[in-house]
Amino acid sequence: MQSIIILGVIITRILGTPNMDLSKFIGEQWFGLYLNQNKVGYMCQKVALNDEGNLLITEEGTFKINMSGVKQDMKILSIRTYSSSGNLISIKYEMSDAISTTEFIASAINGQLKLTKTIAGQTTEKILPPPKETVKDALKFQIWMREKPELNAELISFYFEPLYEQELTCVSTVENIEERFFNGAPTKVYKIKTKINIINLEQTSYVTENGLVLEDMAGEIFTMRLEPMEVAKDVTYSNDVLVSNAAIVDKQISNPRTRETLKLIIRGPLKESHLFCDERQQLVANGDHFIFTAKKIDPNAILKIPYPIQDEEVRRWSEPSSFVQSDHPEMKNKAKEIVEDTKDTWEAVKKLCDWVNNNMRTTYSAQLTNSLDVLRHLEGDCTEHSILFVGLARALGIPAREVSGLVYVDHPKPGFYFHQWAKVWVGKWIDVDPTFGQTTVDVTHIKIGEGDLIDQIKLIPLIGKIQISVVE
Image (tube, rainbow, N blue to C red):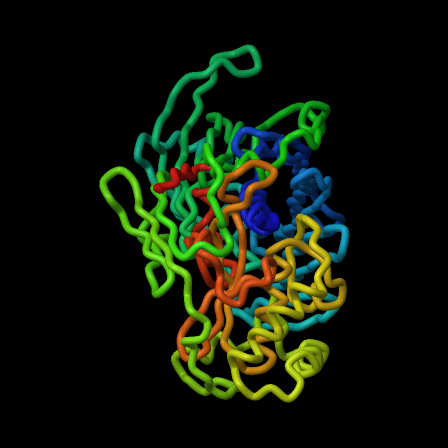
């Protein structure tokens, strides 16, 4: 159900850790990319010097995704350039799919960092504080391992992430030191746990005493593993990422779209930030599991209020963002065209939801999506449906944001699949699913995340880790 944005976010962070032995500064390494132990792509990392004597660290990642039988490729390119003195000079980051290429260029100029973004063909610039990141951060494991750190030793490093438009702080800790047989010889291997602020993501790395990264695992679901080139590039589309990461149930749920209530028992690594409770759903801890209950919302009980919404507490969800270009003329004009002369917020929401549902061509997509590209192409999965709806709503001054979680469907197997929908402010927050054409979502929607791209990262540790039982 859900697009592979999360995969792009994971690999963005994993690709930020160079993996060369420091004594072999120039060269390349190949890695296989795995989602819950199923291979989904490969990555090549190169370290080189240019004619000016600057160090270039290039990572090229390729995903080969099967989403419910639809085969797609997605490519990620990252080039980080450092001066001979070790300072970060520039970052080039691209994410390409069948529809478009999203590009970020960060340049350190006169004590500032200029970030240029090109999304849906629109280029914008932003001035940010100078980065703390240096080549020592990029080569942190190569340098640190040669210092022979002890058990529980810590290292703080910095990494500017163009996708989040800010610098991340990474705290690495040596959790274990063991001897392995590697390349025909006994080798000391460090197990290092890295915690990354802002996105609350943990990364586990296995690094040799010479600083060579053998394996990285992010969120316990996504792995980058050192392999020979021919092995790394040996990828098939045999693994269906939708089915393999769904919470399959042993029996069908009757009348899933129209039933009044639902009760489930959920097991998995849910944290406090995933336990959403509101008028529609309750998700609470109960010993070693969680209990989910939901009831159908009566749309006739929603009050009539005019838009644009002036409530200061929710106004920020009416503002445009890098991936929700609600201030673009195309978005504003289309939103006005859809709602016509409607002045009531709820009536406008229903028209927007119906229009997106009726005009979008549903295709499973592996892409870093944005509302303007979706408006122009009108195709995609639940992520594209939702981000387009959010963009159109915000264009009218109606607060809206994306919601992530799981939803029940019968096919290809009865179960709860990762899914994305939206919520809008109509005097209160109401969940809306333009993919299903539901102005009030049905009771099988399990909300476990909401907000922008960084907030969605909280779902990473849950992918493929949820088990659900239906309570009659």
